[in-house]
View (tube, rainbow, N blue to C red):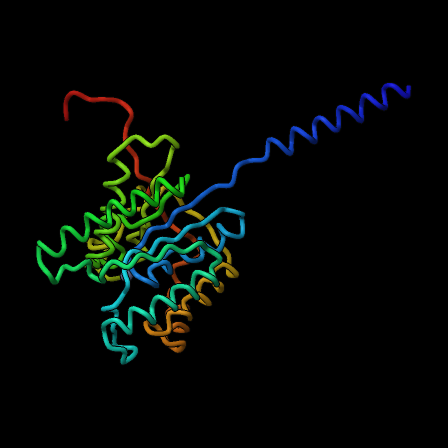
Length: 262
Ligand SMILES: [Zn+2]
């Protein structure tokens, strides 16, 4: 009798020991966007991911030095870049994510023409590749060809990430996802084409809660140079109409070779 109790205890120890050793590795998410405040696109999901124990790294590619708008009277330039760097730190802290804020020029030096813009973007591509290799994510989220707002930096960052992704076979499997806005949630007819997507492509639909949403908008308050508090309140109410779901389009490549288009 005693012997069987000892056996059970030993068995239990072994099982527990195995369970400890068999703990699932932490999932890693890498979100890559262009400007400080762009993370707001998926912020409730970032909050949810952190809450679920996912290791989230947020990459912001540019310094946002040209981010002036009708809501405030900041001037474009070095000072604004400095302000936005601090705002981004604040937002990352509220969201609970690791932040890598690169200092590429806002609009990626498009104003300097081919000779300024192309080397700048090529440097960005290599730096992003290095970050992907170093962080070893399980999933990457960025923008698709719509760039959410059609902003050239958004589209170029998304395209750069896609190019890096397809440029090699990754040792650790990585999945790539694009933020997507269902066309049926967009009322403006032109925008449906410019940035909307048919739901049949948005096969990843992740629910989040009011708490995730509230936290996301706490983070948006950090970006005071872009969105004063009164504007954040309005945006929050407006966005609520879109519901509590993040839509993503998964990058897919068939694994069969075809020898004809038709
Ligand atoms: Zn942006």
